[in-house]
Length: 115
Length: 107
Image (tube, each protein chain N blue to C red):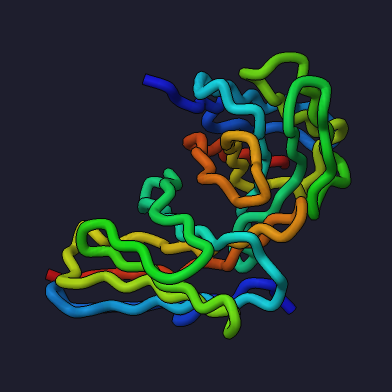
């Protein structure tokens, strides 16, 4: 069965370290997204990609970067982790948009703590 | 101000009750999405709709584009319906999510 996975599921790191969160999907979806979820804010879009070599900034992209070298993977990198980036991170994927908001499939989430 | 507002924030119901969760948005949208987040954190899609009404089992979602409002109804609620329900919209390349409605159904 097709799926979307994230790793690690839990991560504790120190301020200033570089951290990379992995996202891998086997749906063969062109669209992939990274969100963070914090109390009182709901899900907020960090970065998204509509295909290989395509990346775009979302609402809260400062301090994060992504790269898309193949269809299956969209790793999220925190260049220099800050305590404000402590959050739960969700990856999602969907089929190509056609003027509509296609259903998104979400990964299980990664809980990141920055000390 | 959030582009997507949900009400109520928290809801407790007795098993069997009819439940309504509301979502209002302030931007023009292509479609609206209802998501369910389980207590363990996993998020699953319930509905995507751009007009009218959709039904799946005991769940019914409606949308009024002119009023920029959507409702999610649960008939004959059950304790397994306890979860956070999230409303989301897309406008252009921006995605906006409500903060969720936490539902607890008591046996």
